[in-house]
Amino acid sequence: MTPVEAIRAKSAEAFGFSGDLVEVGLRDGPVLLAVHVDESEHCRRAAAQLGAITDRELLTALWELPAGLEISASALPGWTVDRLQNVRGVVVAGSDDSLVRAARPPLRISGALAIGQRFDSVLRRVGQVSALAPMAVIVRRVVDAADPGLLDAQLFGVGVGTALDGVITPLVEAAPVVPTPGPYLWLIAELAYEQLVGELSGRVPTP
Image (cartoon, rainbow, N blue to C red; front, side, top):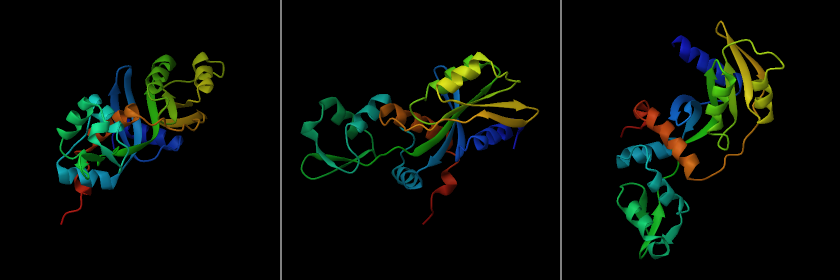
């Protein structure tokens, strides 16, 4: 384990974020996510030769279909049906003209982390997933109790810790977050899965 990987692992552990750690690049900077892979969905996708689904339009179309329920194709917008039927492994045909969503998010996010020197930068980065998972930031310097960044973090329920000489010291606990379901949560899960899928090949059972 490299020093960077060690700091990341210690940081996730300090805030109780469990699972695989994967960095996802977002518009306002990278976010480190702790995730639990849905092994059955991963195996289903491997069998269907379907990897990560990162097409936002396709994910929006999938969100129109409740998982496991037959929905008449005629009840869906035409563009939705076209997108769903053109990608193998995301839907299966039901009775008559109905469709059944087969795909589901490939993992669950247990926490989000950002590590850096500046409070404004790390807070902005984890804020990109504020509605999806508990958040925490690790600042690589001494933090004064009156630091405005510390007060901002407490206001928004962001956990705070410091990293000095390889030692992680938690200062503020991360507040719990009830994930807001929707295409954005699914997209972030897919972006994380995209980073992990190559490493997960060994988890697929062989006949």
